[in-house]
Image 1 (cartoon, one colour):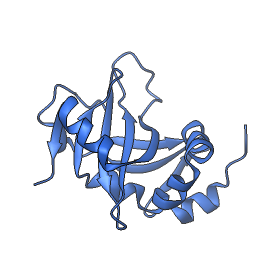
Image 2 (cartoon, rainbow, N blue to C red):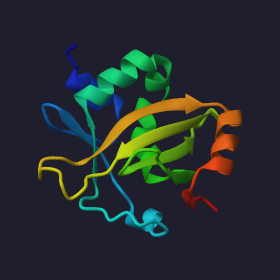
Image 3 (cartoon, helix red, strand yellow):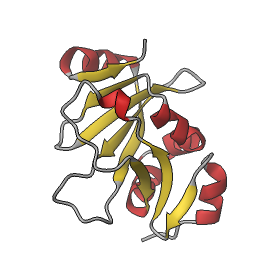
Length: 146
């Protein structure tokens, strides 16, 4: 597994701190954004772990460079949130300052998980307008910015 430079990552991501060797705190999930869903948050903490960082860097390198500095703001103030296609997942949709739409897939902690587990960013990537419009027709949204 490739090494991650936590010092550089801490400098890259605004307002986060390294929690332990394999995770960094990204943000607190705003429960009010989830009020139109059946999701019950067991913790508000949202982290980014090694495995996800490596996945994003390898599979979506341009996306990683474009949004890592703003990832905290992207999850604090999304444009919309939809229910993911896997259990206990949410997809935060956010348009960045350049006007590109990104999706941040988050796995929520559920009751069967150990106490160490936190809500975690699984992946993030840029999506085109065509896909976003398709999502709007086919997916269940629980939040849309007014």
